[in-house]
Length: 290
Image 1 (cartoon, one colour):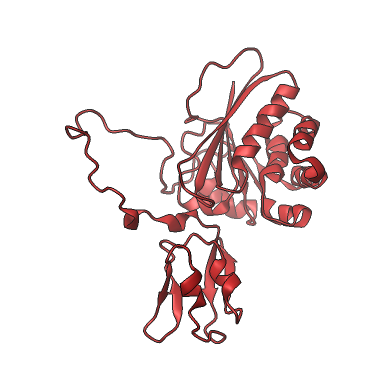
Image 2 (cartoon, helix red, strand yellow):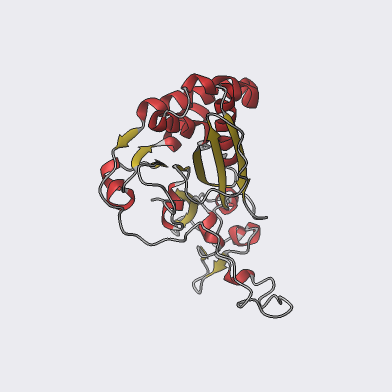
């Protein structure tokens, strides 16, 4: 049985990717399941999705995938806030959406698994007009793993996207052609990150009555990790109108002592409303990886 874990952000299509993967496998007569894992957060928050694919029989396991054969990372910004290789099996496959060359990625994310990289964001912008990389990454996945034929995605994509299926299939094929693959190396690169394996407290750690010690403490919740873009101010254009401060839905824009404003990147989710409302075009949204 093949187990897959998808890392993405809300709105990027990780859940759809998992569903299309399962449908493509079923199209070939295999058994497959797809399911997501996410909290009540909004668009931009980290999201997990999972697949299991079996050649010969029904799949009885319903738990999250903690030791995947394949990991796909839809957003390069997630590489440095979570340990995407947590539990990845030796001789597995890691597929990353990144504009970086594979030789630049290999020192940090190479290991005893196959490494594949593709600039899925650029492909999606060209083919779809938006940086939604779900179908694009499916092409890279198929090329790197051969878990099913590329043609098996055609019907699921048509059923899911209707009139937009053609451009999504074009993005999928282009990623299939452009993905770069490196073979496994002897040992995993050393880096720090947050494991995706959920560790729950035992009965000795839980206080009697299970009280909530810090209810609603949003100030300690780093929502800045959700974003894929962040605002950059050009103060030579700013007229100190304060519209960015007024329209920020999260209250992340703060006044400075000199009358200008700045975004608190600890909490900023990168929604881009400040940039859209600025009458002087003094705020530019920049990709988080830059």
